[in-house]
Length: 290
Image (cartoon, rainbow, N blue to C red):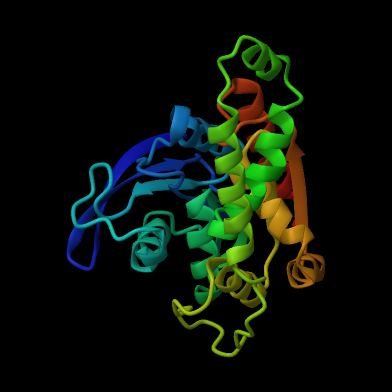
């Protein structure tokens, strides 16, 4: 297999990507969309580089790239909700460089998962999606998650009580913080607005909450989904709470071929070698299963 740097255009700006090409490429390739904040094509802990090499060793061609304004690519960073053109340009380049390709799987973590849900239904070449700890952040959702998973777990830890009995704990400030979070958890109504599912293939407009629009993207996408959630990550817990409290999310994931994996001891970025290897191992099995 080979690794080569590729330069391509997106709306006049030069973008940079890395192509991982097996000697005998399969017809299904993987496009990594970078997420998790201001990162570039290597990913946190170089995981995208390492995952790409593993997938390529299994025969899957892989392309990872810097979208506009990130890494070595030119242009202005527009945020995860504005990278439709970047993903499309990367897929165009991927298919041009690997003519054996017939379809592509979009793989992303955190806000890259959200960008994938906005985009995947619009491109018939995208046949599957991998979502790692999807970003569905709302003020109310964040507050509920912190109250449930941070404060509840904190009072069960011996270090918390050592701090209390050593008089290094400020109960007044903590009570104020909890009360603020309780108010925030009630400020947003449940995501109940009705968003039309018409216009499959069209851009999802920025109307309604982020979870509503992501659900619309999931509803419009008809292919297989692999979902991975970390146990030690508030972003993953917020997504899990959203899903558990929403019949619409549950119904949609039941309706399509969806595979869920949970890593109870994993952090947000799968930072250990064991966590990273487990995720890509699941990915290889999933890619071969359909």
